[in-house]
Length: 347
Ligand SMILES: Nc1ncnc2c1ncn2[C@@H]1O[C@H](COP(=O)(O)OP(=O)(O)OP(=O)(O)O)[C@@H](O)[C@H]1O
Image (spheres, rainbow, N blue to C red):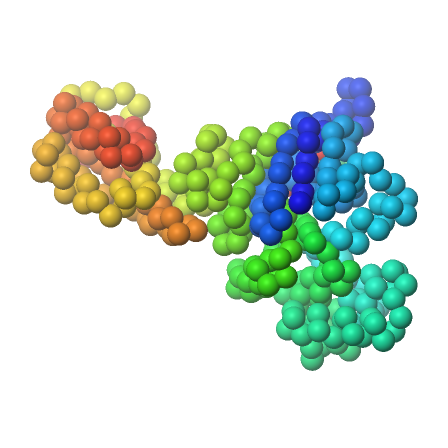
């Protein structure tokens, strides 16, 4: 449905050249919701704008709905873009047009007659929950309502694909939730493939099936959401996950952690577990089988696409031999064990 093959985009040239995308390969099958996440400046906007050729790639091939976009120009490109809707962070509505007229605009540009426009716009306003706002102007609407208008406008030309460029970044968490719910319904009920870029892991967790992580123009991860949240493949992926889960050692502990163990220290570990490990009573077994006492400093359990993810920061108390055995025991039960440092026993 959306296929990027070796797509590169360079802005400028010579010493001032910015390599915004570097040989990106991405395949999004029909009916999926695919998120792309990354830090500011990583290349997310460039990537999504290369899909409908708002930015023309410097190199590589973009195919959408079976049409090679990178070969098209002029009228043919405009026609292909009708099958690709797009929504933006700041909605991009025309302030002098009513809600109805904003949604009608793409149809007017395509040359539809008034009756056919009304026939299409009225159910779209109903779909996005704004049937009673048809004659209001954007200034009279909340942020969430404006984004609903933008979604209805994007759907007016019956696209097969919807591109969402930070579509919820300007909205409060509750409104974000309702817009994500609407996008999920559109995907499920209309079968529209969605590519969204965001810097919010919550958005990815809530509605995406698959997620790509972009860093310095490169797609460094591309995984099912459940896999990404349970075992990110890169350090950057782990940083995103830890920031999202906010599972760092308690502030007071950080200053007491030392890098190297000695005869008077205990290890402090971060444990990540998923699947069966979540429901296995491993902590009590550590005490029984390894003679290690466990002091839990922080813990969290998240449910992500039918997968359960647990995280825990804990101090393991025992001799070096006992705590070493405990860590091997946990690893043998498919827990990820990271030693964050060592803390003095009598602290
Ligand atoms: N029109 C342009 N001309 C020159 N450089 C650009 C242009 N657009 C983007 N860039 C540069 O390309 C790189 C990628 O930018 P892009 O906007 O795609 O990143 P982003 O991940 O969307 O960032 P943000 O989350 O801050 O919007 C950045 O270094 C940016 O400065």
